[in-house]
Every structure is written in C-alpha cells, then in structure tokens.
Length: 91
Image 1: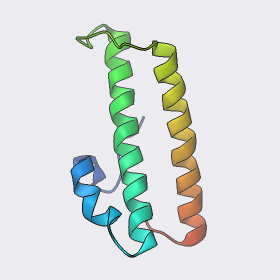
Image 2: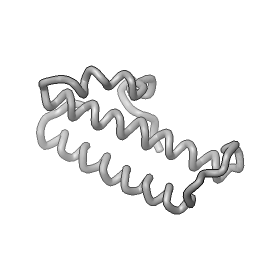
Image 3: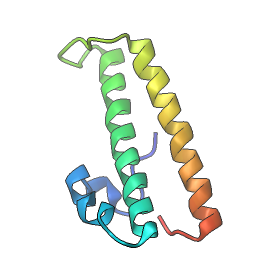
Image 4: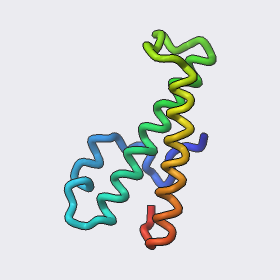
C-alpha cells in the first residue's frame, strides 16, 4: 500500500481536529479522508507485522475480520476519492 500522499504521511489524527470543526464541508470532507487514510495505513501495517510474526501481541478478534475491515476501508477510501474528484475537492 502506498504511503499517504502529498505530505500527509506526517499527519496524525489529532491534526485533523480543526478541519473536522470547520464550517466548510470541503474541509470536513478532507479531514474524514485523512482520518480514514491514517487508520487504514495503521491497520495495514499491523497486519503486515502480524503476517511477519513481529506484531508483539495477539489481536482479540480474528485476523480475517481485520482483513475484512481493511478491504471495506479501502472501498470507502475509493468512494471518497471518486467523490472528491467529482466535487472538485483537492486531497
């Protein structure tokens, strides 16, 4: 999975708080996108560490459930990217 683009790879969830509180829906949309992208990447990296045997803990739920969640998050991210393209929102 590619890293978060355009310098967002250094962004943390806390960095999106102000955007989420904006009156501008485009800023709230961007925050939603960034939050999802950050969470998706963290889950992906966790699953890579699990498969490599370097995770350091055992998840309480099944790995298959986490992989299902990852796929749903990817679909959601894709939908947000298409919507951003249609609505002229630069991510």
